Image (cartoon, rainbow, N blue to C red):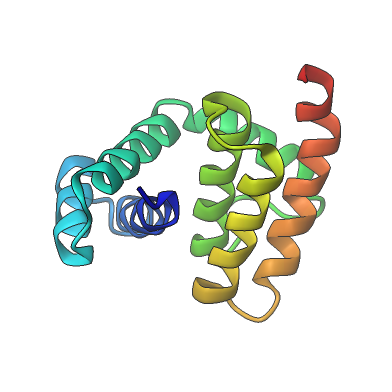
Length: 137
């Protein structure tokens, strides 16, 4: 199983849900089919999307508290959803080490974000990891 493929598809689905206000089931299924995911990767994509959506209010509050001088509305849609996935993986899911979740988020930002996205994502997630995750582990 490649969590990276599931993570990438989850980003695409969350983007559709966030920007297009699409139904989450439909967004996930369309993305899974379009990306040709294996059943394991599709399951991971679904788990990420469900988890982010179920915890979105708390995740967004956490991101907002560490994204100095940035509101969620001002963030690029891609960056916001990459951060949501990484926070879910780091704080709620615990299947991958925090450093791996951050690295994967930075890599997604390099591919899908603009030239500053990877730095922004790394900075916000680094601050969250030092303060929030460090206290719990």
